[in-house]
Structure formats: structure tokens, C-alpha cells
Length: 117
Image 1 (cartoon, one colour):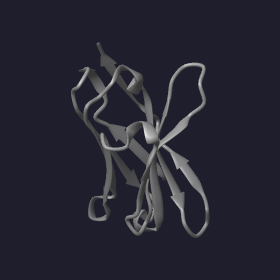
Image 2 (tube, one colour):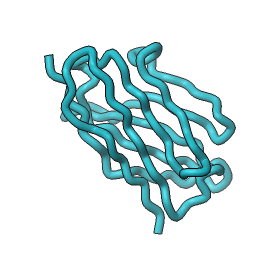
Image 3 (cartoon, helix red, strand yellow):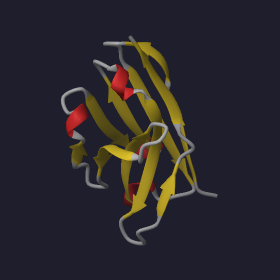
């Protein structure tokens, strides 16, 4: 059974940091391009950061220089290190896995990040 389980969300003050984790099971993790998306009520889900199976990364302009995505294939886990958090970073953050061969897509259940001012 395919599962993506996010953790690490919570409440943090402006300027603080959080580290999100997404652990995958039931998939061949090394074949996945992984990404973090976020969504707030009434808005579309937006890409925050992505990392390919080969380790290349890209970021939304709004988080460049503050967020870092990384992966550990031995642990089937992708991380999102978030620093200098702002109130506008408040959202539900979702982990996404895209298979580079089958193009199947999986989503995690989401984890809430709230940045208080």
C-alpha cells in the first residue's frame, strides 16, 4: 500500500523555523520526483519546492533563500527545512510523489503550518 506521511508541522512565531518530513512507503522512492505543495482556504494548491530523483531542486520565488528541500533515499524521506517563516507561509503543506517512469502521482494527507505574528 502506497503511503506518504507528513510530519513536523505546527505553530511557530514569525522568524522561526520548522522542518517538515514526508516518509514514503510502498513505492520505489528513488524513482520519484518529490515535491512540497501548500494550500490555504479558497486558494489553489501551489508548488513550494521540488527535488528530482537525481537531486536537482527548484523553489517558488516566495520561498527562495528561506526554504530548503532535500531527500534521503535510504530513509525514503523528503524534507523541507523552513527558516525565517512569515505569516503568509501559513498553510497546509502536502507531500507529492511523481514517478518518473509511470507518471503516477501520490499525495500525502497534509500537515498544518501556522506562523503567528
